[in-house]
Image 1 (cartoon, rainbow, N blue to C red):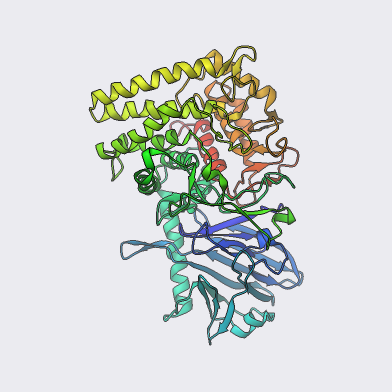
Image 2: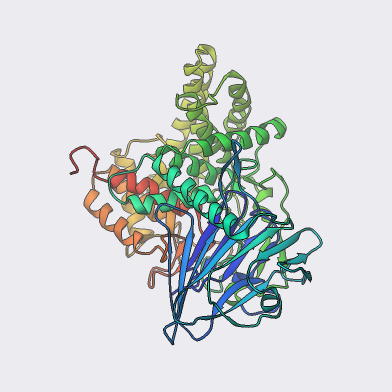
Length: 593
């Protein structure tokens, strides 16, 4: 198994990563972009690495899977003597008193399956990115872990002394362990855990029942959709790009970034994918988040990413206390991309908001007040479409007038035209048409390289990148346009490696990329469908599905030779690509059986 054979549990408040032996190796509390209480994913066996392990002595093998259509995880451990245990992990999530109930709580139910299994519970939270060890105090049925910014408590019906001293014991019957906020539990622990588990499982099954799924690959799409929802911070509406920081994009590459924040472009792709599945609540929550961002954006200027509480400054620093994933540092916290200029964000936000004007299922519809706020962003797009930026690949060493950014600026103006028309604002419709059309004409001229016979990454350049695959999907150009077909052919010649697509192959600030950027292969698959090459697209899609880990999740990148996952995990971009590609390739329901 690879290092990213991890499962996710969460409740739209926090998330945790659990390895194939049931060890919690990553969890940031109280929410996604805060200090990791468990950090073994980046610390390995270092003393600074926090973890939460239920170790089976004489371990032989394990099995792990999610419950059907649920975010409840079960891990089964088998020893060499015929003993076995099952660990059920979940973060409570259901409706209570008419409101979402999603406490900072990680519940583990452990029961014997066969033989006389001996387990050792090792719970070692840390703080300050591994720098600090909490003060530990014990009660008759609980253990408290006191840290400078948070106090946590384990409540259990297992022997507390065994856990504090990490003494192995025979698991003669089921035990429950509730780890979370420092609050006492006055009711029966077993009854509470049983109820919370049933209601959490029921919540997720009901949520999946509401999804509008393609006929084919339903299990794969549901797992992607559940995971995307788990990566939304329901309290504010922000959506993180990944749950982790500093998983390198390729071995020892130094391409180690913190992705636990809300990128505007990533969030657009997430809400678009979930809308396609009828999961519209996440878009409505994101709208609340983005309206708050817009209102506080001076003159409509947007940063590429924000914190979950809409922090506009996320200074990047390196952490010395954790050695990094497989020892491949540095570990970075924060992301200096927040101070970059990336001009595609205006189009991403407007595209995300546009559906609120046309989708009559939504409780909150787009109105004239929101349109006025979006126009501020449109003015920025109209002014910036031909200005240098870092682009969606966030180059750190240079800027250019990137074609993708220009196309998104055009999309901002074009969608404002459509929104104005839907509101009956004829003067504003004509105004935004007058802004959009010259931008499109200029992009067709400046982004086309006649000598290369393709569109190119940047105005006046010669290089090519995978974002050009999105031009038809964004409505900028028809998929059967000879210029797009020529660009597609060049991408196949220069960016395709076997069955995978690189985002680009020219050297950047860190050298030449060594791994394929997973979502780019999904973009390529969709492009093949649009140009009528469905059989080839289907083969590539099935191959890419086989690269998912054992519970159906994907990271940012993968090695083309081994198929090993690299990059931050799980990656929203990759899961979004899976959903869109499945929808474009699946046989229709009508006549399918």
